[in-house]
Length: 319
Image (cartoon, rainbow, N blue to C red; front, side):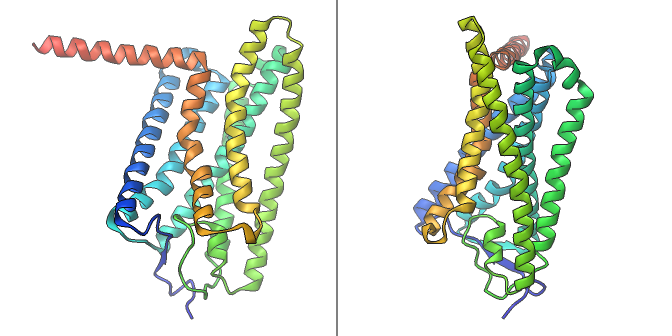
């Protein structure tokens, strides 16, 4: 019998049993994390340096890249460390910190995606009011609200989860610290009910955002279909479809992971789902947006051309 005050560490789910597969997972996670760091870093640099991207969408895209980097850096490095050194342990405080930062960044990302949906709605359905509804102050307030809501949500869940007495061992059936798997170790009925209540409140907030997103996209598609020119419809769709693709991947995998029936659960399925909603979206977001956003592609091309020219000039100046 152990409790949260005496527990020194948790045991995470091993990504594989064979050493060869562990190393394969290490190199795979390394490639994903480096690609995500490079891509999100390029987007941050492009938005910060190119004045053509100093728009509400560019500002929200910059914030989204920060949440993507946060999600990747919270879960992947520890998984890489465990795969490389053939271990599954994480300290009690390390687990609490990982859970807090993961839910902070993942919550902020969802709220930012909701705000970006509002940005597309105003741009397409109320273009004459765009400057008024999405001025610099309004954008800053909305982004701050997304970060603050994510912080409060994560703080409440982390504080309540790690205040529960744990008496069902210390083995987590996940490759990173996650609330449902910690709750399975709890032996406090009242604390368990309290955390379920917090999860329901968060779920209602997420569901409200989902309803807003659905309503916004219904209005957006109705407005786009009324655009007379084919070029105008294509441009409108090209700005909306990346956002819709990111949202669909994020919501479908995350919802299924948390709401799937217990009999439909298995360690391999839980592992695959967790990778799909915690690692894949942050890694794919920059690719999806850069491929469909012409202004962003132009800014990245200009920045990389400038860097290449400076490098060539530096090399020849030293000869």
